[in-house]
Length: 266
Image 1 (cartoon, one colour):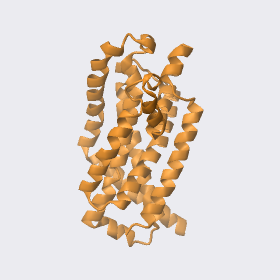
Image 2: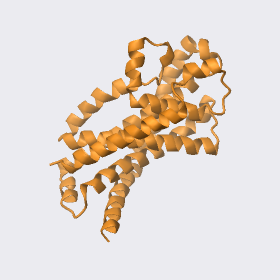
Image 3: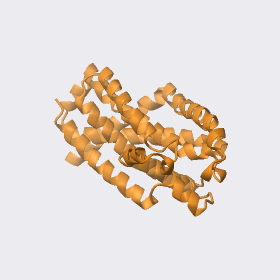
Image 4: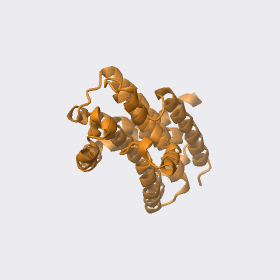
């Protein structure tokens, strides 16, 4: 009986956040427009500079940055999902939820699941652009991609919940978001080949969880593209198995930390 109540409560919170997503059409539209801007600015802007160099003789530069844009999109959407916790606290809704006979662990997990659900919806929309950049993934590839997206979204959603549990105002959350998002964004290999950068940048990038997620996305989306060994060694950081293990460990650690922090939130 107790477990059933927890599941029902968690489902209600998850459903609330997903309904808000579908009712806010601006979020869905921006999920499609923002990647188009990135593809236009970075893809077309740098294509002529990098298009004829090294591995980009076999792989179009726009195809190279497309997995990175997926990762950056998921990162931004899921971390900002934590702002709903801060907003609910400011408007009093969270107080009502916290006094209900529901464990805080259930609330935290529901918020993380809502972040994962949001990411899957947005990436589904984003994949409509794939044929325009020369990527035509099969159903099997899409299934693997959505699994990888869910794995990354679990980590980043948990990070958003962890930050939100320690911050009391929406403004402070936004400042923290901007402080975190740009280093994670630019030091992930989303737009440049990590094998060709200075050693200190490569070292920092290897500490960035987004690096492994984008690398995994590339493994999946390039599975139908024939690349020689030299190109694969330049474009892909680790094996797909290593990426999965690393992201899964990071997800588990962040999920545990966010649940613990949320349970102690005042």
